[in-house]
Length: 344
Image 1 (cartoon, helix red, strand yellow):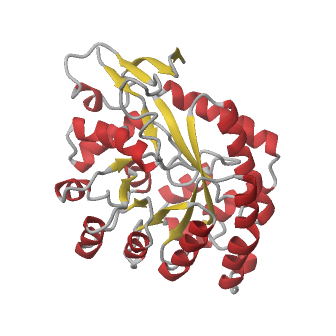
Image 2: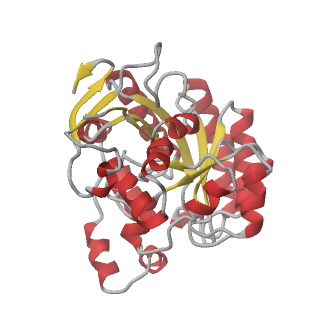
């Protein structure tokens, strides 16, 4: 039996209104993520549902998910907005996350992701929507202390590196560091823009060029891989081995969301990292615990078992080697989870 630090999940969209299993079937029939989005599915579908949901319903559903994740070994989590896409709905999401912070025993960080997708009414007015984020959403977020970080989906068909840079700079002026979605489907220069502008992390990285790797090596931005997203969408896995072999501190997270990764199970993330990304079990655990804590700036609180940190501890079931944990994928390898010293 092993005592391990609880997982630290530094990239999630765990606050959402409804699952998107109809799109799951569309994908089985052969439609791509982009094609589903063009048909009114994807992020815009989640946004419509969320705009119609009450704050109380969103809060209770998210709290229920957090309870489930704690039982699976997660003790700290980042939660993004981004399914609002209006001033009112984005603020509603962030206020719910603030309430979750106040009432959950987990360590929680909030990320403002107003630039998740362009709302349909702004399809031909891109700059107007970014103006809305910068001039109307951010001032209220700063005033009410609703977010710790800012994010954008920097990708073909979503937000350009130039638009992302503007969002990063506006966030910095409001006291929010950047944690940005980049290189999920294409390498378009977004990673370089993030590194140059001091982003805390770049997340996804399924598509990486030599120039991208060089930029990471020359900066202080953490690379975050989301293997369960690759598993669910059947897209390439982040070249984690190359990232680690380049001397970079890889982070593993779930990307828990209703569209592309409807799972917050960090045990499966660790297994996939070893099975599909060739990480040694010890490397995978490091990436899923202390490295994740650095990606949320909570390394002084969680991520390792040390005097002075929170007693967020997983006790494994009987096993003669830690290597058995990722090997035994699809099964619960945890006997007990302690959050802040209490059995959960």
